[in-house]
Length: 69
Image (cartoon, rainbow, N blue to C red; front, side):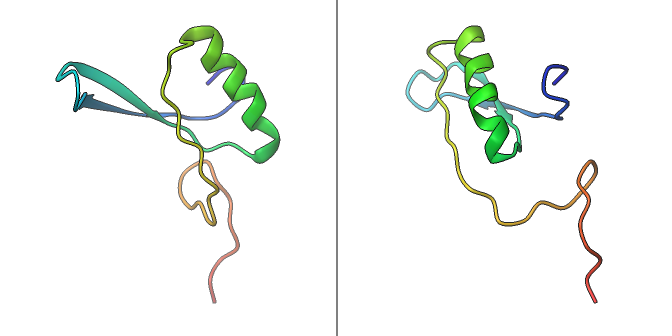
């Protein structure tokens, strides 16, 4: 969060295969920031399971958007 100036949502989950508690992080970054984020994750946990998906729209605290008319 401090390196990229981005917020993170953390979910407590149970692994379906291992049945062990885990954490899931949800982070929204720009396409330009993705490689930096991937490098940080690889350094912290080389075995991390990651899903990357393009996002069409993000609204909420920390994001600015055009008011809808």
